[in-house]
Image 1 (cartoon, rainbow, N blue to C red):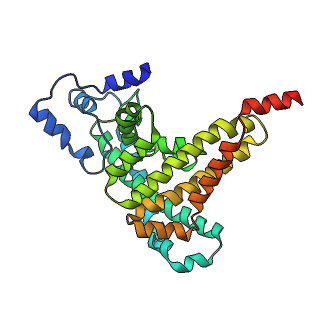
Image 2: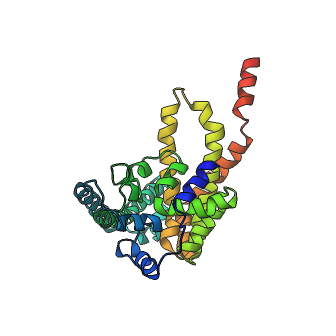
Image 3: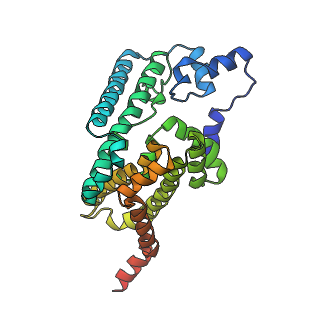
Length: 296
């Protein structure tokens, strides 16, 4: 637990800021509209110091990634939009094809967020925020490659909207006795009073539970065997498919549209997770399996 308190202590404000510093921090333009979130101590450190690391290369690279994200969003939206997922004619196609369309559309929708965040990061770096151990990774809000190619939901969740994740970890997760459910509910409440958000984050809580069961009961059985690589590939496919199913509810806002979207996918995400949780709960622990094998 010492690392928990050490992390909190780093962000601890030990004196009441002046009125000018307070409003300057609250309304500084780099994080006002789309983030990323900057803590008060980080802000004051940048205001009182000059970075020693060159920033222009990182500014340009991050801005280009952001522009590419927006281009991907526009391109995929032109080919197949979020509204197209609600078209009744989609239900005529096989489930595998419908899920592939879900993954494609959600990939494009994520491009919108990548574009916003990376352009925001570029602006923050330009103003001196994010320097950490000789690089500018401290302000990064998303690790795109880790998110897209992750084979487990825990990694996916950690690298998405990382600055907000950090706040949720310190203020909610660690203070609720490490209860993931409260994190999802607070996040849903924070995003707004859209019922579809509660569908999304409620399913996310189930997905996180299934992920923990998988890591505890299934991963030890395949680690170091010939099944490890196929397991990791299958893990990425499952995370992307169920994650796309989950995000459809988040992006559609209304409960009716979110429910219709899930119906279009034959409620695959809910069914898949429920079946997996039941199977994993019934699966014996690894230690018992090893004992049985040793007896045989």
